[in-house]
Length: 326
Image 1 (tube, rainbow, N blue to C red):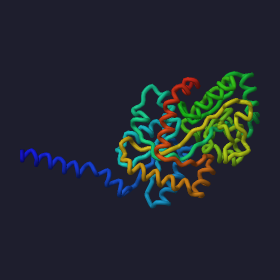
Image 2 (cartoon, rainbow, N blue to C red):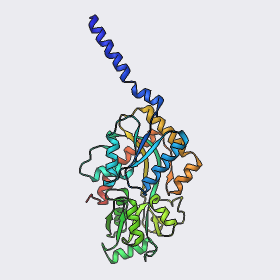
Image 3 (tube, one colour):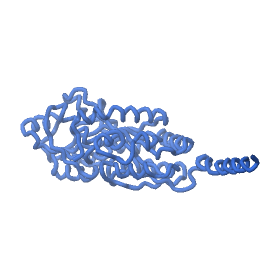
Image 4 (cartoon, one colour):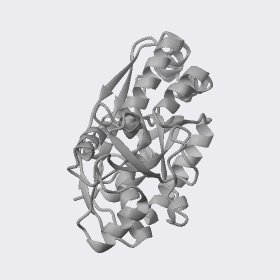
């Protein structure tokens, strides 16, 4: 009995030393650099917003937040790396609606489940999709595109950052809503799609506002419409799809930080608090708005509820869009 008591006590002490390691890390967190995985190439909307967050978080807290691009497969390669990382709070990823709630219904199999393998940490921003074209294009309005597409089914092309992204879904939803047939040209990220649209190699660009706003303001792209119900704060002169006769069209995406499932709640709460402080700062709001996104802070509970609801509702949306991974 005595021997058994010693053994149990030893085990309890061992557990007592090992188990609170995460709790201790939470109190001292962070004690080293935090890696922020960006699951898309440099230059796109996700990359731009991620770097704003990483840089401003580093400035405000004296933490070291290191952004790193891990692109491919509509964002799923970077998500996979983050989902499989140790849940210590030193690995996080900038997730978004397309790769986390749409991608799982488009890919035949993924090595992670968005709800089971990742935990929402902080909502950062949301953005409508924008439909644009080269300044040398004959299209001035959405009505021009619809008329041309009806006259030449499948001959009008649109570029997107890749199969299975919310941008891809938005393009398909546009086809369905306008009863037209376009040809989708997927790229590996926003920037190559942007460059080909400017060059006129594709007729249209369907993009997040953050990815396209720089070239729009530089006069190299002509914006035709935003897909949200309201006009974008950063592009107040660009009409919505609804204003141009596409009834009830309302498509947007969101961006937020996620960590591997099992990351201690104290750590995710600490990160959420710091990110929300950032989003309350006028300078940070201006930096995000300048990129065409709309900053929006949420509690972890609010973000998780939105995330789970979006995931639950996305299967029907994907099926209705007709989008597939080629």
